[in-house]
Length: 377
Image 1: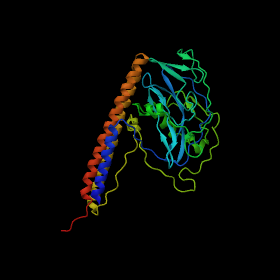
Image 2: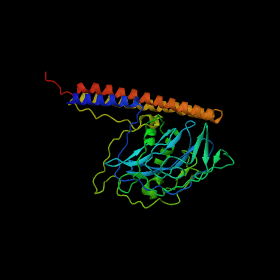
Image 3: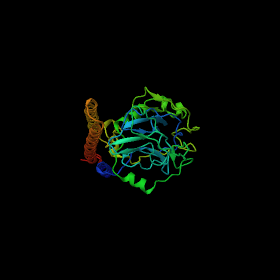
Image 4: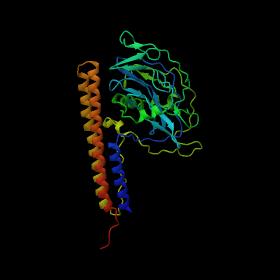
């Protein structure tokens, strides 16, 4: 039986390695029975400079606290000219709500029909457009200082989507469906969230005031002018609507909520700090205490080595980020350099993931023969 389990585990690790090399998206996340709070009402900070794209705020979920938390909207420098942001969104998956991560690409895809505001009114983006290598801002829906940014235009936008519901499907959710063009955009090659967006997410996760249980849908930090910097922030003016959830770890009648693994995009992991914690193998139990102890020590050594590899690669990439910030050049050159650097970091991170998955696979294979019952002399 143990040998069969070892073979199954080896197949699973092989599948993970194949998934890492595929261009199609896979996801790893959880399914939540309760939908997130409504989108709060807040003001947009002034755009800090040319080439910045607005990334709207959204509700993320922290399984450690069984609660949603608000990730403030912010301005993010586009990874390359021509790229736009498709926001992430929550959608009903049959057993619970699943988060579909956003991405960068030449076309804005489907984001659940959710009205995030500031040009993201449920379908596409009307807050600005690219003209060759310059981004022009629509002043009717974006906050731009025309003294500092002159590439602007003014086109009135009629927003008929007045709902502040923050999820698609399920009880009380939106019923929007993707168009053929949006489905095609989702299948095209694109990039996951950038390092700046990851910093924004991490800062929000670590702030107790941004949890829904604390702010009741009205976060004190609703938007920031730069990612990861909460010193200049816009508070929410009001909650988007009432939010009185049941305990987040229970379903409609009090039964445990269904939490299951969902495929998540492997190529959204740009840096080691973006990676989920290493999933540990079950403790060995062969009936031979000495063998079990030895194998457990080998596992612990392997996990420590993998963590050191992550920290070493992250430190190297952080140094490259700092070096990039000190470089000089025009905006287009800097954007191209940043894109090349992020793509290189993404490749490095995926190569490390593949190597660590192979090491765990080999460890599993070594465990399989030891899992057999000791033979009598």
